[in-house]
Image (cartoon, rainbow, N blue to C red; front, top):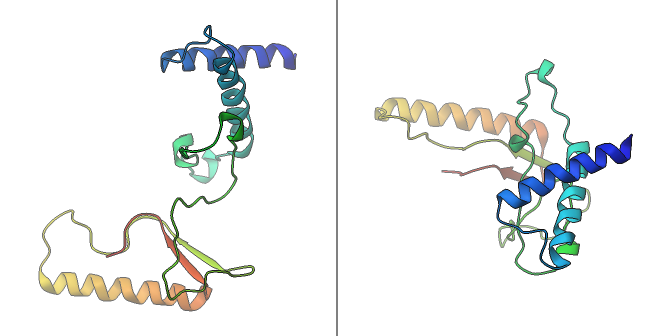
Length: 153
């Protein structure tokens, strides 16, 4: 039964690769792409378990990001269950090595939204409110590092 499912899954991956313009009939390198993409996507599917009953989004794009690193071979492709940084995220005055760091992850933008015009009073109130909330969270969690998804203003 699992061989049939694996075969059907590889047929589906073959169709997706063909739709992206990767030919599977030319040479051995393309066969490697089929095996690697099928393996990576299967392992990723086993890791991602959204629960619609809790209110989580069912779109896997909310949970999975694909990053391309320009060097290396296709055999070095792998699934990483965690955070990946492309650049050095540490400030020059920040400790570079930490054992068992406490991280605070903030989703979204920290700062003003550009959704519309605000008066100076409402901007100041919004800024004060945001500072109070963030300082309360930082004091409560005592993180070694704070990671923000998008931008900080």
